[in-house]
Image (cartoon, rainbow, N blue to C red; front, side, top):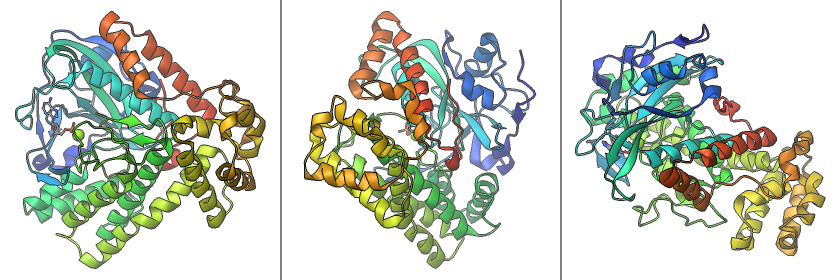
Length: 480
Ligand code: AMP
Ligand code: MG
């Protein structure tokens, strides 16, 4: 069946004109085998009514959806590991569609692995199936933990054999579609500034302001930067509370809505380790776990630099200076949310943040990141459960006492969530590398997709149990 009446196409990016993207043709894949369709996400934009054949036509063959002008590879530059690279842009993806969701937000369907574009350079424009599966898993886990994230929308295997340095090759190919709240990156602005096109910087600010930060007044460039700073601070805080390491925080991988996307070499922390680094090619640990706030702030200063071509430096600097306070405020809020307790004012909230981190630090490898939040969710309401559970013996000593004291000051927030069967289990859902590799190994060697499906089902349940919403970060809680 065609899209439902709830489908509301609105291809706004194209209003910007031809200087921001290039019409491209998708690759003609030898096969299109549907591996994953996110019907929950599809339901939020009126596309759950598509038959599998229609789905494949739109998301494997890229016949434009009704009301969409066709694929456009977006132009952007960016700093990669702090080196400016003007040879970027959508090299293996494109913007496939834009539409309103059921909450009125303007969302993009963007691709990864859909073929070569004018920006592919030496690249083949393709995505490995393993890379696609990894993005599906990362987005699902982040959504479960209430982090503002793009959602994996579709994964279709495409029947090609790819050569890659970081996977046993030849390896299988796929095309991914993600549903995301904008693909306008910091690097989109950097490109306009680099070209000396202040008219383009201005047009981009106005476009992104109107579409994504409508509370900011027209022509208020510092106000726009402030909104991006706030959203980025919230995102970064939630990554930290989730124990997530994105891996590649280049300025072409950060967008103006503060919703994360483009999950390549990501990892979740097994346990407290500030220097934990996700990407094997990040030899200096530039994007290590605890350096992510610094990395995002650095990227924001580059966005600020681009905006300086059209606005006064002083107010822009002031907007950037808001990052630190916003980040620490959001970090306190994110830890409270993860521990399922209410705010008790800044000082008490900060004590809880500090003592939680101290406990995780002291717990070392024995106290994994995710189980700590699972055990103590709901504060004192979980006391018996935590102390009687598999990590009970870790919960003693001075550092623990300080944590318990700080935690028990705070009232539980919606303690009825503890009645969910998820909390009756001994262990939470984690997303550590061994499990990710095991899920892939079953697919890679036996074409067994059961592990992936089961994991996604468990994450959906875990998400219902946690009840952590990214909604206030403008991300719908859509699940498969
Ligand atoms: P990423 O690190 O995935 O954000 O990508 C950085 C840049 O490299 C972007 O411009 C991508 O489009 C491009 N790129 C990455 N992999 C490929 C590929 N296999 N073929 C073409 N371009 C690619
Ligand atoms: Mg990227």
